[in-house]
Image 1 (cartoon, helix red, strand yellow):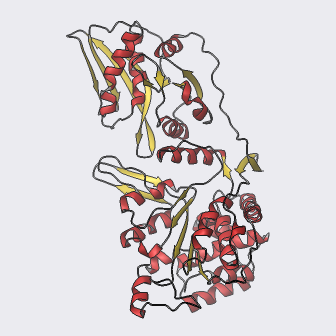
Image 2 (cartoon, rainbow, N blue to C red):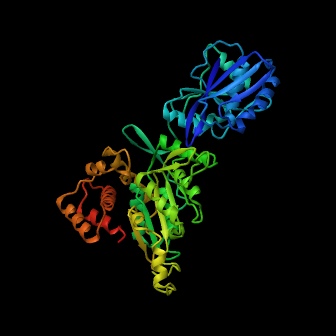
Image 3 (cartoon, rainbow, N blue to C red):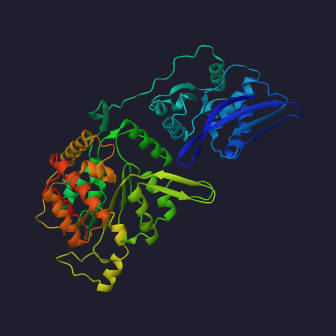
Length: 502
């Protein structure tokens, strides 16, 4: 029995698969076993044609391909190449261990690309399961950015066989360990960012309080809720926020590229965090992921490391809003089905926008509100207290005035975010302030006696929960970082408390 290694998706992560081959006496037949999907079973015809087109003799025996483990569902046309290679190698007795082989075959034996190769190989690399791989040459520009893997590119089935039989391997494609972007450095690690602002905060006139909250949200990855009349600039702020987010490490850029591919896009490998803005009519499955036999990633998973924006927040279904409490608190989402249970990372900045009432004119000084007290109460009651407790920054935006002027551009805000980011890294934090655990809050957010007294008074006056107190401390820590302060002072705590919804 001969075997090569391949892999398949299991949720959002890849699982290694042993592709095993035997040729036994019996009536000529070709079968693939091991819970293979239609794309793999159809590979029999592609493999036959590729072998015959390149002068290989199809063995007149009973050929069996087994994909192990047999209780794992496999999918993907990238199994073509290892299956064909095992058959063509025939009686070859060389060592094939540790060889990962990926590629879809054309009928003439050419090796083509499969869109799932990048996320599969990146997942294997993160698990430490792969050191070398044979891949299509056309995929090397993307795959070579994954570190610690030796890649060998091939164009045809014949190239693959020559490579597997070679006593001396040719020079492999070197991976690109760095990116050609602006970066800041801490502990010899580069964190990349861009200075391109197609949507700039300079376009927003007035709304200084909202701009300040956007800066705090970006610097610490704190959840933000903007409430204001239609046209006050809520969506403008949310869409500009993604351009002033903290820098990205090399591994984070690779993860963002993986999410782009899972969404069906060509990866950009740019230091730009994801921005997801689902419509309020979206179903729960599209937001959180789901599926009967295979759990698919949803908007919450695709927003990992970036921004999830809910416009017209109260119009989202009650089920969606209440289900959002788990990823907002735990920063992951677990999809449970009869046939599968998958956990997705969901560490994102949640930004929401809403009107103050159904007609939107409650805060207007010029247009009368048409809503009754009952309608306003029903509208706001769609947001439960446990949900609002997970919002770090709540801002009421005033109506637009002719006296409003532009004040600050995205470049200035982005500089402040990067400075705050470096201060968090210099303290030894592995995550940004918004994701600190209780133990890390005690370590990185100590208060002096005066600040602690203010917190104690706020607990009694506003009935703050333990969760709310923790979030106030994390916001105060970010405000101190923006101001360049080592310690959290009274003014930082008071500003953080001013953003709590009461």
